[in-house]
Each structure stands twice: as structure tokens, then as C-alpha cells.
Amino acid sequence: MQGFSASVVQLKAGADKGRNFEEVRRLVEQAAHAGARLVALPELFFWRGPQAEEPAHAEPIPGPTADLCAELAARHRVHLVAGSLLERARDGRCFNTSLLFTADGSLVARYRKIHLFDVEIAGQVSASESRTREAGNEPVCVETALGRIGLAICYDLRFPELFRRLADAGAEIIVMPSAFTAPTGRAHWHALVRARAIENQCYLLAPNQYGPTQHGFDDYGHSLIVDPWGEVLAEAGDTGPEVVTAALDPGRLARVRRELPALRHRRLGT
Image (cartoon, rainbow, N blue to C red):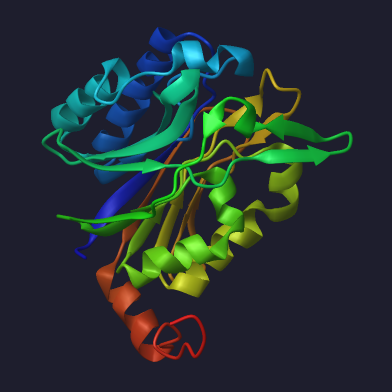
């Protein structure tokens, strides 16, 4: 891993793909001007509408949105984690898929969300992603010019075994695009994001959506960049679109892993 600056982009996507992508263009340009070499978008940045309409708005990969993201990465010479978009699957269903583009616009990783958010918290959150979506089954961690990057999406945060698989694959940075709800976010977001970074001694980038949704709950915002010691290096608010940027230091990563070599001290599950 080399030293560089990274940005997470916070936004609120709606049902107009064109408008969403114009906001993405603006915010990625802002991140690039801030010196970021890695930029991460939130989950479902490209379209957010009624669940029944998801299959109709799902796209192939490569496809229109993926191609636009490739062009955006190449234009600004950044590695771009294109949060997630709905990828067409069999039988009119879709995967929730995160894409990683390098600074020349090449697509080098595709991660399909493994854990689907089927939750009923009385009076707070009701969701059943499995009604329209297929689950992925393959952790993804790839070598890049910036370091070894692992991918996760939102509800995956609650499943530490996935993050440990990524650490075992050599992840130095894990990027986790999210649309984490406000009720669950107030209770668990900071604790879980910091825990996954601490447990796996890696940088964790967590871009999130914010504000009211069409699903009866708000998204939490508070997009985060956390270091391998669990320190919050950058945090967005919860009331608007925002880009936050921090320096990722390979010396810090190496020092944490050397001084407290917990990954080498494991006795179970190795």
C-alpha cells in the first residue's frame, strides 16, 4: 500500500438516474480537486425508487451506468468505487453490485452483496430486499496500484466473518458503500464500522446515503473514513450531500499490525 488521499461521497439518490449522475459528477470532481486518488460512492447511488420497480431499472454490467462511471474515473484519474447499482439477474431479479474502476477506467472488481436486508423493527424499519434481489456468494478483494482493496455493502457490516475473509485475502482497505438506515445507524453505525476496522486492522471507507427515502425511514448519513486503530479520520454530517477526505498512511497500517499483531495471534478459524 502507498500513501494517498481518499474521499467518501455522501448523497441522496432518487428515481431520476440523470439527476443522480449529475450529482455524482459534481461530487467526484470535488473529491478529485481535493486530491483524492480513491473515491467511493454510496450504495444505490444511481437509482433509488419503489422496490417493485427495481427489476425494470436494473442494468447489465457493462451497461449505461457502469460505462459512465468508467469515463468518470478516467477523466479524473481516480480509482472509483461505484457504490452499488442494481445488476440484472435471472428471472427478472437483480443483484446489488459494487464496481471498482482504476484510474484508466478499467473495471477490475465486481462484488455482489451477499447479505440481504430482510428486517422488521416495529415502528422503525421494514425491509425485505430478498423480494426483488439475489444474494451474491463470493467475497472480493483485489490488488490495485493503491493497495489491496476489499469490497462490502451496507448490511454486510453486521457479518464479521466476511470482513475476516477479506483480511485473510490481504485487504489493507475495505470500501463499504451503504444506505444505512437512521434508526439502526443511531444505534450501531459508528460502533460497527470502527469494530470492523479494528478487528481487521485495515482502513475502512463507508460512504452512506442520507435523509428521507421512499421506504418509510431516513438514511443515516455520517459517512466515515476510519483507520486501522479505529480512529475516525473523517466524518460527514446527516443533512446534505458532502465529500469528506482523509490521508491513508501505509506507515500507520504497518505500525498497528506490527505493534499489536492480532491477525497473527488468531487461534480459531484459521
